[in-house]
Length: 254
Image (cartoon, rainbow, N blue to C red; front, side, top):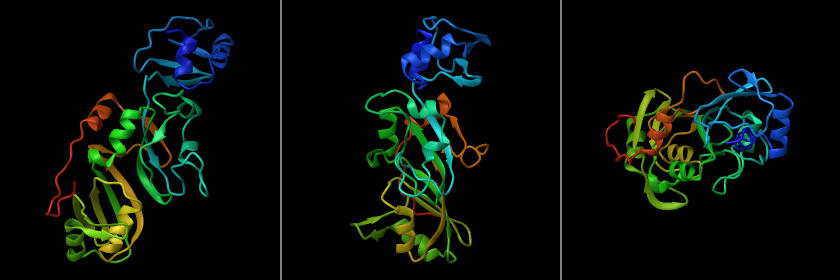
């Protein structure tokens, strides 16, 4: 692959812009500046290079985890709060169209006041696999509640509560009391404001909400709010291999 094509595929601008970056000595491979835009590169996954002094890795498809802070919207065109996409570097937001996706896209949406694990990718198959309710990918939330959590409320969440937009009961895969006012809830659907509405239907109220896990992927502890990193190959594989969990009647969390 020509070096200018590699930069283009990674979101550094048009082919002309990428060629200009190279020709002006702004790109290095193996710590050596390369000024030939047509320089042949073995584009292996994880290949390291720098652009304008910033280190980068080559990834044929982008798989990213972000620790979403409160006060941000999962929208390219936010209405009130800053977009989570502003927390990402331009190349991730500008990767060329692949399968109808332009730049990385969030897997589903977290409310502006919800924090925690957010996946983003430019792989349409991955986005569908993670977001579609048909695939039953479990997601673990920690909800700080207004009132003490009792066994009757936990039982309602496990057995199913009726929301105002669906006559069928919606059940949690698992519901556990972590502290007097702290609930851990595992779901495999993604209805609008689902955690908040389920908790309200069970007789309590969510004061703060945090997503701690998707599938087998825990929110990386080293990521501060607003920080991101690439997913490893093993993490991506584990997410693709997620299988449906059965609803649990015990209090064990997912």
